[in-house]
Length: 204
Image 1 (cartoon, one colour):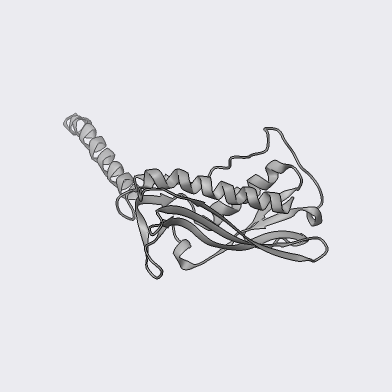
Image 2 (image 1 turned 90 degrees about the horizontal axis):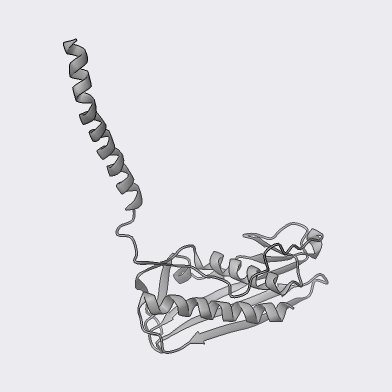
């Protein structure tokens, strides 16, 4: 009886210790990489297909939107800040929710889908059998401290079913933006949507 009584009285303490250990492990998981940023920035399309809208067709007729190429300054989750012609910093207290190339790919695909002219697929690499692709290079998607503006610049490369290739540069600038995450975030979304809309009109 004494043995059983001792175990019973110790159980609440053991549970508390286990709970504290679990909380400590959880805290360790969510704090990896240092202090969490104040703001996570994503891109939301201004134009999306209506609920229930569907598209179909053969793989060869689909337009495949690929991840744009990026330089190292954009191949991170930080928001690039162009300080001068040669120096690059990163915006304080803000990060992308996903790498800029992937965010831009999603935005381009969604905006083109909204026009309803194409069956649109997305891929990190070319899809076998597709004859129409949209790829390119994301040159800028960040903040320019010299002009206090947000800049999105994208060089698009489109191939069609005939094997013809077209290239065009698209750009959007939102001026008068302060160097704070709260001001930069909506401006980035606005500029990226502007560029995506231009590309969608070009694709047709």
